Length: 265
Image (cartoon, rainbow, N blue to C red; front, side, top):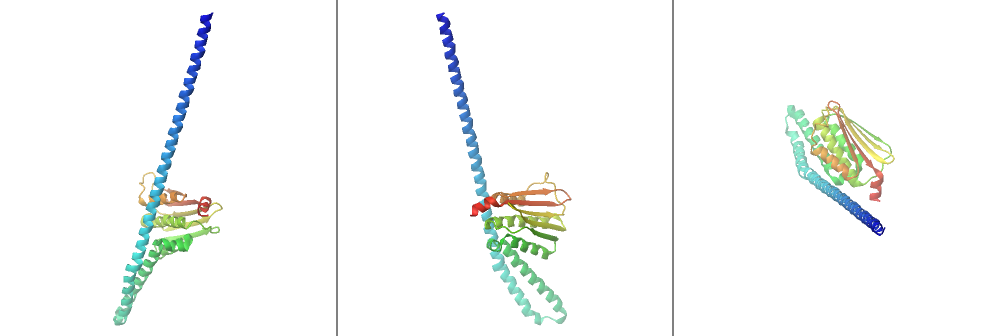
């Protein structure tokens, strides 16, 4: 009987010990998994932060390069063309009558080229874009493309304008400046439709062309598309690109107000 009690006691003791060991092992495993998960989260956050900082630095470098190019176009090349235009005007009186028309046309072409150069230098200048705002910047760029007669452009604004962060306006403009440039260079489109829509909680900008399009599955993302996506992520916006061969391309940017308004408050 005594031996039986000792055996029962031993079984209970061993059982309790096993339970304690199991609880310890499970607790250790859970703690390890929690720590591992935390480290993975921290690593992902660090990578996200690094990517954001890298994208921000690249954007700032690009903007400074745009600004330098703007100054170069305006101050150097623009001045040279202005002098050339003045010299042509001074020489016009000495041109024979039968050459006057051709000379006048050449002078006009030079003058138009000078205007386009100055307009281009403005749209490359970050300070100028920040001063006039997103809508006027888009309108200026659209007018410039219209004058080049590459394609027809329809531009529509819906809703009441909502003021947003100036730096974000510049980034949104740069995204669509890249988009317009891609349409002109690659799309072979005859029509580009642009809609800026101020909705209750977000801004939506859409650009749709009727060009040759491309197959998203089989195309490698070039620097242009990559830059557009990185810029949109930098301001908390969503960029959606839809494309199909022979059916054109649609680019839609969705920019939420709330987080950006809180950020700038």
